[in-house]
Every structure is written in structure tokens, then in C-alpha cells.
Image (cartoon, rainbow, N blue to C red; front, side, top):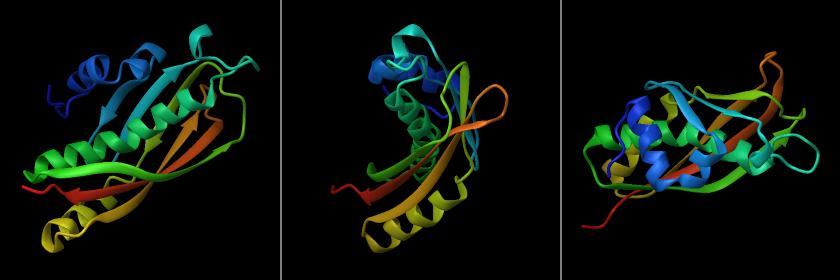
Length: 154
């Protein structure tokens, strides 16, 4: 199954290829070339012992908000390009309860990295940030992911 760039196709893809994220409630709500929005709701099965959302569930949602744009732009390039998270950092500033919305607005960084890897054949990296806010608009966590992109060998 190849993931399309629409919200519905992404969420269907996640059911079949990323079931742990799907079952935890991670859902793409919006995507374009610059921004992606992913939500996840705190529930019994994605909680930690402190009655808030487990950090890894937040990480899945945050990573999706960055990775969906990378996938979209790779697909648009028409080239065979691999992608992988090389590093990440996270900061947790408040208990994550209720619906958490992760937004990444770093889509503009991807094209340059893809253009360079296509032109040079060398892998490139790009750091992308996703900020998670609760229903009151308070930041609960901030994640940064270093994505690496590289041309696949023929």
C-alpha cells in the first residue's frame, strides 16, 4: 500500500502499516506543503502511571506531523528516496491530558534537502519541530526530529 497525500489515505495507511499509532488514536487532521496537524486524545490505553499521556504516544503524534510532509514531498519528487529519523529531542512542559494537537510548520525545509540529495547523490538531514498543545492552547511538549533523506540505489 502506498500512502497518498490526503488525510484519509494517511489515516488508512496508518491502520495497516502503523497499527500501534492508529490504536493509540493518532490521526492526521491537516497537511499541505508547509504544515501538518496531528491529534491524539488521552485515554486509558495510552496513559502513563501519572494519569497523563505516555511520552511515546506524544512522540508518535509529533513524528507523524513531521514525517507526513517528508513522505509527501518525496512522493512529489518522483525519485526513489529513503527517509529515516536520525535523532530527536523532546521537552515536556505540562501533563498531557485531553486532546493534544501537534503542529509542524517546517515543510519549507524539506524541499532544499531533497533537491540537494537528488543533485549530489549524498544524504542530507533536516531538523523539524512539532509543538503539542492541549485544548486550552497550552504547550505540553515540543519534539524535534532530525530526518535524513538519501537516494535509494537502483
